[in-house]
Every structure is written in structure tokens, then in C-alpha cells.
Length: 97
Image 1 (tube, helix red, strand yellow):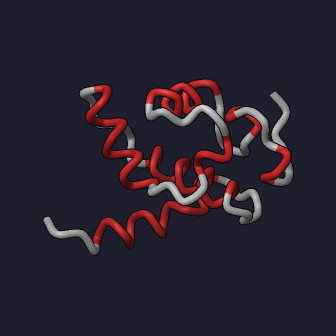
Image 2 (image 1 turned 135 degrees about the vertical axis):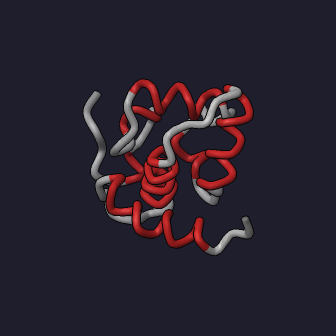
């Protein structure tokens, strides 16, 4: 599926940059069925909920993908998911053990 360049053009989850079939399925499992539903979502809470729902620990890079999707839908430019890795790592270091 062709990716959109502007968030307002996204009609399906798979049109969001960095979101493929598997990640779109994860988002649907989380109750997110439309791109606009990602606005104001907490990517870290989404990851936590996904791990609980699937009873599995997912690769932390999933958080990076969730951050990229949320930010894109909030109007940020499309960036590769790995551009958010340093942010995720820094954020996770601030959490209590």
C-alpha cells in the first residue's frame, strides 16, 4: 500500500509511514482502526497494552514505530522509525526500575 506524505491524507493504517500489515494488525488489536485515532495516544502505554494483550514481550523497536505513527498523525514529518530509538531509550532510563 502506498504511504501518504501528509497525515490528513491517511485513510487506512497501512498508509501511515512505517506501518505495515503486522503493525496495523497490532494497532487494531489495541482498538485503533482509523489513523486519526492515533492522535494523542501514548506509544509507551500502547506497547505495554500490546504486550499484555498478546501475553508476549515484543521487541522494544515496536515503541519506536508507535512513536513515529503517533507523531506523524499529529502533524510531524514522516521519519524512519529508528529516528525515535534514542528518544525511547532515554525515556525508558527515566522510569523507575
